[in-house]
Image 1 (cartoon, one colour):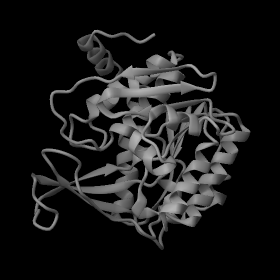
Image 2 (cartoon, rainbow, N blue to C red; image 1 turned 120 degrees about the vertical axis):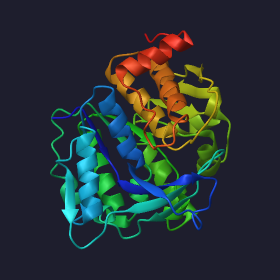
Image 3 (cartoon, rainbow, N blue to C red; image 1 turned 180 degrees about the vertical axis):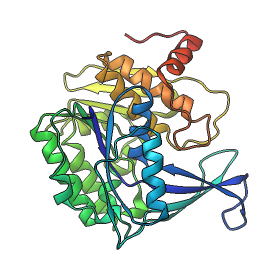
Image 4 (cartoon, helix red, strand yellow; image 1 turned 30 degrees about the vertical axis):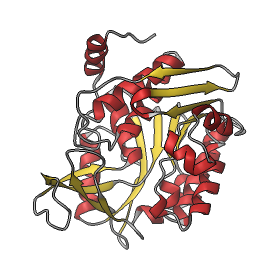
Length: 320
Protein backbone atom coordinates (compact mmCIF):
# COMPACT_ATOMS: atom_id res chain seq x y z
CA UNK A 1 0.00 0.00 0.00
CA UNK A 2 1.13 3.55 -0.68
CA UNK A 3 1.37 6.42 1.79
CA UNK A 4 0.43 9.18 -0.70
CA UNK A 5 -2.55 9.30 -3.04
CA UNK A 6 -3.39 11.71 -5.83
CA UNK A 7 -5.90 11.92 -8.66
CA UNK A 8 -5.51 13.59 -12.03
CA UNK A 9 -5.31 13.42 -15.79
CA UNK A 10 -2.00 12.33 -17.34
CA UNK A 11 -1.05 14.46 -20.33
CA UNK A 12 1.15 13.06 -23.08
CA UNK A 13 3.12 16.12 -24.17
CA UNK A 14 4.74 16.55 -27.55
CA UNK A 15 7.33 19.20 -26.70
CA UNK A 16 9.03 21.18 -29.41
CA UNK A 17 12.79 20.80 -29.70
CA UNK A 18 13.11 24.12 -31.57
CA UNK A 19 13.62 27.20 -29.32
CA UNK A 20 11.31 30.15 -29.91
CA UNK A 21 9.59 28.58 -32.91
CA UNK A 22 5.79 28.68 -32.95
CA UNK A 23 3.76 25.51 -32.73
CA UNK A 24 2.57 26.23 -36.25
CA UNK A 25 6.09 26.13 -37.64
CA UNK A 26 7.81 23.62 -35.34
CA UNK A 27 8.58 20.27 -36.98
CA UNK A 28 10.60 18.40 -34.38
CA UNK A 29 9.04 17.23 -31.12
CA UNK A 30 9.85 14.76 -28.38
CA UNK A 31 7.30 12.90 -26.30
CA UNK A 32 7.16 13.30 -22.52
CA UNK A 33 4.56 12.65 -19.84
CA UNK A 34 3.09 15.41 -17.71
CA UNK A 35 0.08 16.39 -15.65
CA UNK A 36 0.18 18.44 -12.47
CA UNK A 37 -0.88 15.74 -10.03
CA UNK A 38 1.32 13.17 -11.76
CA UNK A 39 4.27 15.54 -11.36
CA UNK A 40 3.64 15.52 -7.61
CA UNK A 41 3.45 11.72 -7.61
CA UNK A 42 6.70 11.33 -9.55
CA UNK A 43 8.54 13.85 -7.38
CA UNK A 44 7.36 12.27 -4.12
CA UNK A 45 8.44 8.85 -5.32
CA UNK A 46 11.83 10.26 -6.30
CA UNK A 47 12.24 11.46 -2.71
CA UNK A 48 11.51 7.98 -1.39
CA UNK A 49 7.75 8.06 -0.75
CA UNK A 50 5.32 5.46 -2.09
CA UNK A 51 2.52 6.91 -4.22
CA UNK A 52 -0.61 5.65 -5.97
CA UNK A 53 -2.05 7.65 -8.85
CA UNK A 54 -5.76 7.54 -9.71
CA UNK A 55 -6.76 8.11 -13.32
CA UNK A 56 -8.16 6.64 -16.52
CA UNK A 57 -6.60 6.32 -19.97
CA UNK A 58 -7.64 4.94 -23.32
CA UNK A 59 -6.89 1.51 -24.73
CA UNK A 60 -4.54 2.85 -27.39
CA UNK A 61 -0.80 3.55 -27.80
CA UNK A 62 -0.83 6.76 -25.77
CA UNK A 63 -2.58 4.95 -22.91
CA UNK A 64 0.05 2.20 -23.12
CA UNK A 65 2.76 4.85 -23.01
CA UNK A 66 1.24 6.52 -19.94
CA UNK A 67 1.11 3.31 -17.90
CA UNK A 68 4.56 2.18 -19.05
CA UNK A 69 6.12 5.55 -18.14
CA UNK A 70 4.38 5.83 -14.77
CA UNK A 71 5.63 2.35 -13.88
CA UNK A 72 9.15 3.41 -14.88
CA UNK A 73 8.86 6.18 -12.27
CA UNK A 74 7.79 3.53 -9.71
CA UNK A 75 4.46 5.24 -9.10
CA UNK A 76 1.56 2.87 -8.43
CA UNK A 77 -0.78 2.20 -11.38
CA UNK A 78 -3.31 -0.14 -9.78
CA UNK A 79 -5.90 2.65 -9.70
CA UNK A 80 -5.49 3.57 -13.35
CA UNK A 81 -8.43 2.15 -15.29
CA UNK A 82 -8.76 1.90 -19.09
CA UNK A 83 -11.66 2.80 -21.34
CA UNK A 84 -11.80 1.63 -24.95
CA UNK A 85 -14.35 4.28 -25.92
CA UNK A 86 -12.21 7.36 -25.19
CA UNK A 87 -8.69 8.59 -25.90
CA UNK A 88 -5.80 9.61 -23.70
CA UNK A 89 -5.30 13.37 -23.40
CA UNK A 90 -2.32 15.01 -25.09
CA UNK A 91 -0.91 18.45 -25.78
CA UNK A 92 1.62 20.31 -27.91
CA UNK A 93 4.09 22.60 -26.13
CA UNK A 94 6.53 25.05 -27.65
CA UNK A 95 10.01 25.71 -26.33
CA UNK A 96 10.85 29.20 -25.15
CA UNK A 97 14.07 30.81 -23.98
CA UNK A 98 12.18 33.30 -21.79
CA UNK A 99 8.81 33.28 -20.07
CA UNK A 100 6.14 30.59 -20.13
CA UNK A 101 5.67 28.15 -23.01
CA UNK A 102 2.50 28.05 -25.10
CA UNK A 103 0.48 24.84 -25.03
CA UNK A 104 -2.31 23.50 -27.20
CA UNK A 105 -4.45 20.92 -25.39
CA UNK A 106 -6.40 18.00 -26.83
CA UNK A 107 -8.24 16.71 -23.78
CA UNK A 108 -11.95 17.48 -24.04
CA UNK A 109 -13.92 14.22 -23.70
CA UNK A 110 -10.82 12.21 -22.80
CA UNK A 111 -10.79 8.90 -20.94
CA UNK A 112 -9.91 10.64 -17.66
CA UNK A 113 -12.92 12.94 -18.07
CA UNK A 114 -15.08 9.80 -17.87
CA UNK A 115 -13.61 8.49 -14.60
CA UNK A 116 -16.62 7.80 -12.37
CA UNK A 117 -17.21 8.03 -8.61
CA UNK A 118 -17.78 4.25 -8.60
CA UNK A 119 -14.07 3.76 -9.38
CA UNK A 120 -13.04 6.08 -6.54
CA UNK A 121 -15.30 4.20 -4.12
CA UNK A 122 -13.15 1.08 -4.61
CA UNK A 123 -9.88 2.70 -3.50
CA UNK A 124 -8.31 1.34 -0.32
CA UNK A 125 -7.37 4.18 2.04
CA UNK A 126 -6.06 1.93 4.82
CA UNK A 127 -2.40 2.93 4.70
CA UNK A 128 -2.74 6.34 3.04
CA UNK A 129 -1.14 9.08 5.14
CA UNK A 130 -1.66 12.04 2.81
CA UNK A 131 -3.32 13.06 -0.43
CA UNK A 132 -2.61 15.85 -2.89
CA UNK A 133 -5.57 17.34 -4.75
CA UNK A 134 -5.54 19.87 -7.57
CA UNK A 135 -8.18 22.10 -9.11
CA UNK A 136 -7.42 20.77 -12.58
CA UNK A 137 -9.13 17.39 -12.42
CA UNK A 138 -12.60 18.66 -11.38
CA UNK A 139 -12.41 21.12 -14.28
CA UNK A 140 -12.25 18.56 -17.08
CA UNK A 141 -15.87 17.30 -16.80
CA UNK A 142 -18.86 17.03 -14.49
CA UNK A 143 -18.12 13.32 -14.13
CA UNK A 144 -14.53 14.01 -13.08
CA UNK A 145 -15.74 16.63 -10.60
CA UNK A 146 -18.11 14.07 -9.06
CA UNK A 147 -15.28 11.54 -8.75
CA UNK A 148 -13.04 14.21 -7.23
CA UNK A 149 -15.67 15.15 -4.66
CA UNK A 150 -16.20 11.50 -3.77
CA UNK A 151 -12.50 11.07 -3.04
CA UNK A 152 -12.30 14.35 -1.13
CA UNK A 153 -15.24 13.29 1.04
CA UNK A 154 -13.63 9.91 1.77
CA UNK A 155 -10.31 11.56 2.67
CA UNK A 156 -12.05 13.96 5.02
CA UNK A 157 -14.02 11.14 6.68
CA UNK A 158 -10.80 9.19 7.21
CA UNK A 159 -9.02 12.32 8.55
CA UNK A 160 -6.21 11.97 6.00
CA UNK A 161 -3.90 14.99 5.55
CA UNK A 162 -4.94 16.70 2.33
CA UNK A 163 -3.24 19.46 0.37
CA UNK A 164 -5.08 21.46 -2.30
CA UNK A 165 -3.53 23.51 -5.11
CA UNK A 166 -6.09 25.57 -7.08
CA UNK A 167 -3.98 25.20 -10.25
CA UNK A 168 -6.18 27.45 -12.35
CA UNK A 169 -6.98 26.31 -15.89
CA UNK A 170 -9.71 28.77 -17.00
CA UNK A 171 -10.08 27.25 -20.47
CA UNK A 172 -11.18 23.93 -18.96
CA UNK A 173 -14.10 25.42 -17.01
CA UNK A 174 -17.51 26.23 -18.51
CA UNK A 175 -17.32 29.72 -16.97
CA UNK A 176 -15.16 31.86 -14.73
CA UNK A 177 -17.90 31.99 -12.09
CA UNK A 178 -18.12 28.20 -12.00
CA UNK A 179 -14.34 27.97 -11.62
CA UNK A 180 -14.15 30.49 -8.79
CA UNK A 181 -17.13 29.15 -6.85
CA UNK A 182 -16.12 25.50 -7.18
CA UNK A 183 -12.43 25.91 -6.36
CA UNK A 184 -13.06 28.10 -3.33
CA UNK A 185 -15.57 25.59 -2.01
CA UNK A 186 -13.29 22.60 -2.62
CA UNK A 187 -10.36 24.35 -0.92
CA UNK A 188 -12.27 24.39 2.35
CA UNK A 189 -12.08 20.59 2.51
CA UNK A 190 -8.26 20.54 2.59
CA UNK A 191 -6.04 21.04 5.63
CA UNK A 192 -3.39 22.85 3.60
CA UNK A 193 -4.25 25.22 0.74
CA UNK A 194 -1.54 26.32 -1.72
CA UNK A 195 -2.66 29.28 -3.86
CA UNK A 196 -0.40 31.62 -5.81
CA UNK A 197 -0.71 35.40 -5.55
CA UNK A 198 -2.05 35.72 -9.11
CA UNK A 199 -4.55 32.96 -8.42
CA UNK A 200 -5.67 34.92 -5.38
CA UNK A 201 -6.45 37.90 -7.58
CA UNK A 202 -8.80 35.77 -9.68
CA UNK A 203 -10.29 33.63 -6.94
CA UNK A 204 -10.88 36.20 -4.19
CA UNK A 205 -9.89 39.59 -5.58
CA UNK A 206 -6.52 40.33 -3.97
CA UNK A 207 -2.80 39.78 -4.48
CA UNK A 208 -2.08 40.54 -0.82
CA UNK A 209 -0.73 37.25 0.60
CA UNK A 210 -2.21 37.83 4.05
CA UNK A 211 -5.66 38.61 2.66
CA UNK A 212 -5.50 35.49 0.50
CA UNK A 213 -4.49 33.40 3.49
CA UNK A 214 -7.26 34.85 5.67
CA UNK A 215 -9.82 34.12 2.96
CA UNK A 216 -8.91 30.41 2.77
CA UNK A 217 -8.46 29.98 6.51
CA UNK A 218 -12.22 30.35 6.75
CA UNK A 219 -12.51 26.84 5.28
CA UNK A 220 -14.03 24.29 7.67
CA UNK A 221 -11.04 21.98 7.51
CA UNK A 222 -8.23 24.37 6.55
CA UNK A 223 -5.44 24.80 9.11
CA UNK A 224 -2.63 26.27 6.99
CA UNK A 225 -2.50 28.46 3.89
CA UNK A 226 0.77 28.79 1.98
CA UNK A 227 0.72 31.53 -0.64
CA UNK A 228 3.33 31.23 -3.37
CA UNK A 229 4.85 34.61 -4.15
CA UNK A 230 7.19 33.63 -6.98
CA UNK A 231 10.97 34.06 -6.62
CA UNK A 232 10.41 35.83 -3.30
CA UNK A 233 9.31 32.52 -1.75
CA UNK A 234 6.09 31.80 0.11
CA UNK A 235 3.92 33.42 2.77
CA UNK A 236 2.58 31.10 5.47
CA UNK A 237 -0.31 31.68 7.83
CA UNK A 238 -1.78 29.17 10.27
CA UNK A 239 -5.19 28.96 11.87
CA UNK A 240 -3.58 30.07 15.14
CA UNK A 241 -2.71 33.41 13.53
CA UNK A 242 1.04 32.75 13.31
CA UNK A 243 2.46 33.97 10.00
CA UNK A 244 5.83 34.35 8.30
CA UNK A 245 7.54 34.39 4.91
CA UNK A 246 10.01 31.72 3.81
CA UNK A 247 12.44 33.26 1.34
CA UNK A 248 12.92 31.61 -2.06
CA UNK A 249 16.18 30.61 -3.73
CA UNK A 250 17.77 32.60 -6.52
CA UNK A 251 18.51 30.84 -9.82
CA UNK A 252 20.87 31.97 -12.54
CA UNK A 253 18.41 31.38 -15.39
CA UNK A 254 14.82 30.21 -15.68
CA UNK A 255 14.44 27.66 -18.49
CA UNK A 256 10.74 26.76 -18.03
CA UNK A 257 8.31 27.41 -15.20
CA UNK A 258 6.16 24.32 -15.87
CA UNK A 259 6.17 21.95 -12.89
CA UNK A 260 7.50 24.49 -10.39
CA UNK A 261 4.21 24.84 -8.51
CA UNK A 262 3.70 21.08 -8.49
CA UNK A 263 7.24 20.66 -7.19
CA UNK A 264 6.50 23.18 -4.46
CA UNK A 265 3.44 21.20 -3.36
CA UNK A 266 5.39 17.96 -3.46
CA UNK A 267 8.22 19.45 -1.41
CA UNK A 268 5.85 20.68 1.29
CA UNK A 269 3.93 17.41 1.50
CA UNK A 270 6.94 15.07 1.60
CA UNK A 271 8.72 17.15 4.23
CA UNK A 272 5.67 17.09 6.49
CA UNK A 273 5.43 13.31 6.10
CA UNK A 274 9.07 13.16 7.23
CA UNK A 275 8.10 15.12 10.36
CA UNK A 276 9.96 18.27 9.34
CA UNK A 277 8.73 21.60 10.68
CA UNK A 278 6.25 23.57 8.60
CA UNK A 279 8.89 26.22 7.94
CA UNK A 280 11.30 23.56 6.67
CA UNK A 281 8.54 22.03 4.56
CA UNK A 282 7.97 25.36 2.84
CA UNK A 283 11.72 25.77 2.37
CA UNK A 284 11.78 22.38 0.65
CA UNK A 285 8.92 23.50 -1.57
CA UNK A 286 10.93 26.58 -2.54
CA UNK A 287 14.00 24.46 -3.19
CA UNK A 288 12.22 21.98 -5.47
CA UNK A 289 10.59 24.85 -7.36
CA UNK A 290 13.97 26.52 -7.87
CA UNK A 291 15.50 23.29 -9.18
CA UNK A 292 12.59 22.65 -11.52
CA UNK A 293 12.55 26.04 -13.25
CA UNK A 294 16.09 25.37 -14.46
CA UNK A 295 14.94 22.41 -16.60
CA UNK A 296 12.69 22.06 -19.67
CA UNK A 297 10.78 18.92 -18.70
CA UNK A 298 7.63 18.93 -16.57
CA UNK A 299 9.38 17.22 -13.65
CA UNK A 300 13.01 16.71 -14.70
CA UNK A 301 14.32 19.04 -11.99
CA UNK A 302 12.77 17.19 -9.06
CA UNK A 303 15.61 15.91 -6.86
CA UNK A 304 16.53 12.66 -5.21
CA UNK A 305 17.29 12.87 -1.47
CA UNK A 306 21.00 13.18 -2.31
CA UNK A 307 20.31 15.89 -4.88
CA UNK A 308 18.19 17.83 -2.40
CA UNK A 309 20.88 17.68 0.25
CA UNK A 310 23.52 18.79 -2.27
CA UNK A 311 21.34 21.80 -3.13
CA UNK A 312 20.91 22.68 0.55
CA UNK A 313 24.65 22.40 1.11
CA UNK A 314 25.28 24.68 -1.87
CA UNK A 315 22.79 27.21 -0.48
CA UNK A 316 24.06 26.92 3.10
CA UNK A 317 20.74 25.85 4.64
CA UNK A 318 19.52 22.84 6.62
CA UNK A 319 16.09 21.33 7.31
CA UNK A 320 14.79 20.96 10.85
